[in-house]
Image (tube, rainbow, N blue to C red):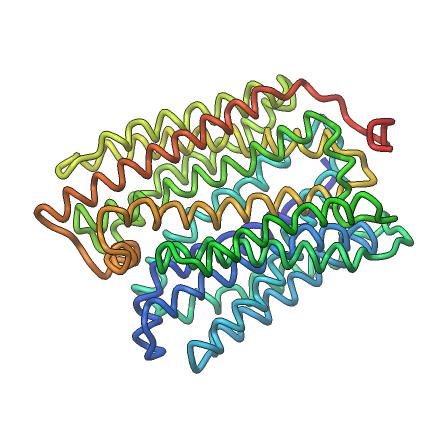
Amino acid sequence: MPDHRNLILLTVLIGTLMSAVDTTITILALPTMATDLKTDLFLAIWIIIIYLLVIAVLTTQFGGLGDIYGRGRIFNLGFLVFTVGSAMCGFSPGIWYVIGSRGIQAVGAALIQANGSAIIADYFNPRERGHAFGYIALGWNIGGTLGIVLGGIITTFLGWRMIFYINIPIGLIGFIIGLKYIKDENRKPLKIDIRGMILLAVILAMLSYGATDLAGRGVNQTDLTIIAVSIALFLPFLVLEKYADNPIINLRAFREPNLTFSLLSSLTQAMGYLSVIFLLIMYLQGILGMDPLRASLLLVPGYIIASFLSPRLGRLSDRLGSRFIASAGIFLMACAVIIFMTLGLETPVYVIVVASIISGIGGSMFWPANNSSVMTSTPKELYGSISGLLRTLSSVGTLISYVISISVASLSVPRRVAFEVFLGTNSLSGNVSSAFLTGLHSAFLVCLMILIISGILSFLRRSAKPRTSLPDSYA
């Protein structure tokens, strides 16, 4: 592999890792941030939510911008925006300032995530992509878990502002390498689908806000109305995109079954898998009474295993195809969830470690194989749009997983208590602890069902041949 491709791979890895880590790195820092910024946890929660919302809304659109203006240009711009947003977060004097700065940071993350997979597809041929995506999987998918671990460690020893300051030198290094080696040969003189972008942004923003607020306040008419309206707007969006000259999301691409199954599998896997991570944190802190740092460190073995295996299993998917590798990975994650469903008031810690390792192995099989399947099933003309759509679906899945964790687990205890357990500011005991454990078991069951659906979708795909141009089915 030529040296410049190694550097391109490194740059994309840095970008995806940095932006994905910040999806969850603030979770265990929230109590400290709330105290320091003199606010309550319910307002501080929006430090997490605003990041997820912005990425979910903008990633698909920014993938299309990469097709139009050049993926290198948009990707490198993401580094600058993310770095500036991180510096603003670290300097924040108050809660509203840090929430706004997180929004800016998320814009940069969306620019990076939307174009990363497409850049890999540009520079690596189909027989090498599984291996390359194995490294990128370390950034995007493992980054969420790593963020929880780093958030606990950095906040405990260095303070919450440092979780943002560390992004500044890393972001500048990634920007310099990307600016030198990632070129914009793929640029096309196309127009932006402004109306489609606006309508899609409204739909995703309303849906995400309604679902998140529903989890925090409970069932209420206002949020149900917001969700219903967002779903109703989806039909005019489809009509608008169907007749757009250059749609930001080319819906005709979904006539390709492999691409459809791979994208939906990515969405459902993110919904089910990240919910499990959130629920484990709630169990360790609420039931076993661990502090946030110790709880996060128990996830390290699974992270290390996944980091080691992802590139190697990605290379294996290059040889054997993505269908069986990705589907087997989902099956292993489901097996880990079944083990988590047996957790009790006095379960030995080693059970959790073993199950997290099984889950990590499954993730290292699924992520690179599925990403490779998506890009192999995508014609080159749509690399940016589909790369953005893949990241958008994963971001929406992350947001929904957060909602599932809080909503289902809080059925057995007051929502305020569920939030406090999630953030590590409250531990439970006695009958309350038993009732909360029942709620967690119900939430794990929901995760298991979602992962089973993801596995079925993954298995339904065929062994795909690389697309080099738009076939008749896209016309």
